[in-house]
Image (tube, helix red, strand yellow):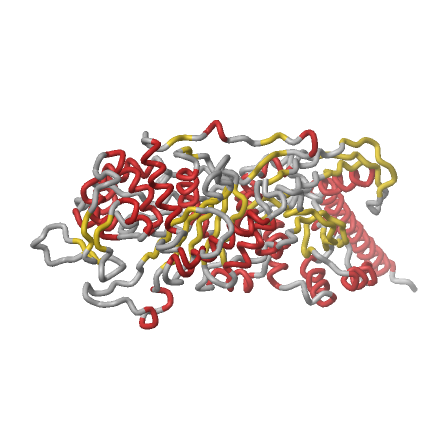
Length: 611
């Protein structure tokens, strides 16, 4: 006989269990629906829209950089980039690990940089993990595509510098946009653009070089494949820029400096156009475009030769005797001396006869009787010690500033330093001390607190060649290309030095010509030259030596040896080029910088069409 009570209870229990299971399943289903419709609504809404209509940014091609003869200095070329859309990657950590296994060249640094880029990324934005894939890389990724959802290979346009380190301190380079830069730019106009000018011309002319973004509206299938283009607005490419730089002259300057630490700058004194700007050592800018490794960057940072340092713009050197022509002209105009003023040089100078301290001439035996002409030709220190003391530091500072010392040259590169043109007020403000007469004395030979950049030296030299006109220095010659190129003419911005008599300027110019001729300090360097020129050497002492001690180079640490400087222009009668050469720790200016200046002038004048 059946137990009805037992069966009833069993049925009831089963009903309750089934009911509970149904309720649990319903709760799970409702939770999932809520998750999909509420929490993940935006993601799937975006995906849904993207499966139908997608607005793709079309980044503009960056403008090219040419030299004065049409040689391309900064180009764009196609590269293949490994990219990920984070929202379509199922397991980011596993995907990145798989990529590294397939492509060992994808380093942990690349992974870290990619993860950093995730922070500021827009939804469903394609982000680059590695740029510069070769055919083998592409094949490995293609074969394993089924393991890498959300990963694709995209063709991109990337900046390329064919001359490598030879142009880097002038051109600069582009690099990946960082979050700090992202906060400053028009993000709408940079959608799809991954690079921006970091230094040099690339940074200074970013607005002209970048261009204007375009868009295309496309219809896609569920896999993201484009079915058709619905609408398109083409991007406007960045504007090309032609430079005053002559790549031939630039490469010659690079060759002349070789592995030495130094600078060569060459300008056209007729308009301030910079025809060569080399700072050595340099570095290859191309790795910075795709993302240089921390190890490689650290090697550049830690190098004692400072390859990242732009010596032309930021190197602040004592100008040494290169400034004697400018000081001489000032003294003539102030009436401190005349062309006939003579003094006896015994090889030293004393402020007062009873003083024990002697300011030594570079020629310990002295130059005998000297005047303005011979003191420039022979680079007599004693004459200029006396001249500076009689002029006074405030007049010197005021006059030299009209040549551009202590001021910016306003070159179109940014980041330049103004050097130091000291006076009483400067020392009080910076050292809280009064000015001493002995400090004026050594300013007379371009030492002490006085520092200048190679740009200032070449600009001041061009002003002598130019009869007192100081043009702002300019790298860019024109913006645009062909008939649409807009020439950049900055001659209207020119200034003039202090008022002077033509006869006084001629005396200074003739003395500079004599420097390169028989009896001049640079005669050996310019012996046999088939062109006329003017110049002035400078040798800047870095190591302290006693009054009675002789400077013996071999006993001085290499980094404390004298800096060699030389400034020059040619042809003397109608100048077309002015140069400034600085070679660090090389020794005498006439011996070590003079020959480089001569070869620069010679090479320029040998070109078929230097203009």
